[in-house]
Length: 321
Image (cartoon, rainbow, N blue to C red; front, side, top):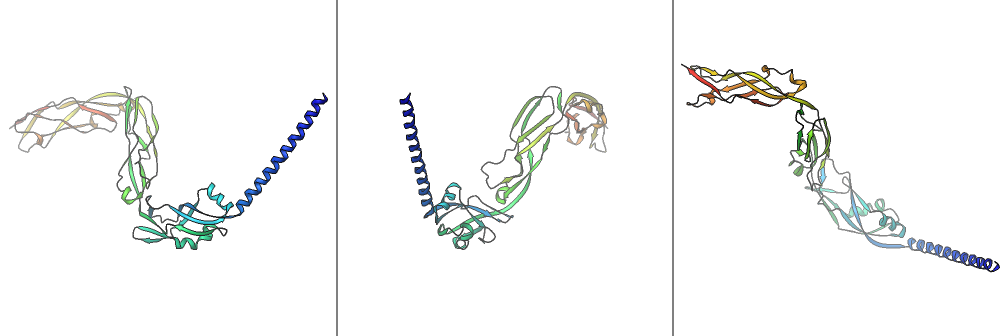
């Protein structure tokens, strides 16, 4: 028992000595770091460009120079901020550049004048490379283009949509260089396929935006597709046939004078549709000298019907002298 107690005491003393050793080692390391960071160092760092106050009517093209290699002299604490955060230098397109033809030109002489505001008093600016930066620009164009639905939607038998698909927004703005934006006249949605539809459609669809167009911006990247799906039924009506362009010196007799017209419509609209909503015509001027029949054409139908079909293909006629 006594031997064990002695052993525990010795171990405790030894551990305290080790802890004190590591504590002194830690403080020595901290002092060394502060000593190193307090010294001044010279180094070259790559700075990205922060473009500010670019005129709204212009857009800077992405193929313009975007970095500067800057040699600085400063203490180690300042260098730590550059290593942990990607450094940037601001170029003011109102004060710091000259407009030459279709470019903005920046020279390093202006950067030396702004060294104290850009880097602070504790930083000495030694060199900048390259000497000049050239920013190509183009006129900024805002163009509105329609959105086109690219879809294959199949309905369960007996169901369809009574009104056209609603796309919101139905057009978007393309913003960018005139040379690029002027070439875009429409934007399609990404292709979607829906089958066996028998209830209302509500979907968010991605737009198929042009790839590799970093200089272009789009007001929307998605659109909302909605449609009201209803039960549909087939209808059939007898519609009178009219003849146009009959010469004044000719009298025609034709048969039949009525044709069956079939159509597809929603149950809600079925009772509102009548024969007067349709018009079937034959154009006599389209006949040849030996022709004894006319071709009926549907020239009027209500907006609430689909798949309208005339069941009679020929209208027989004779000329009465």
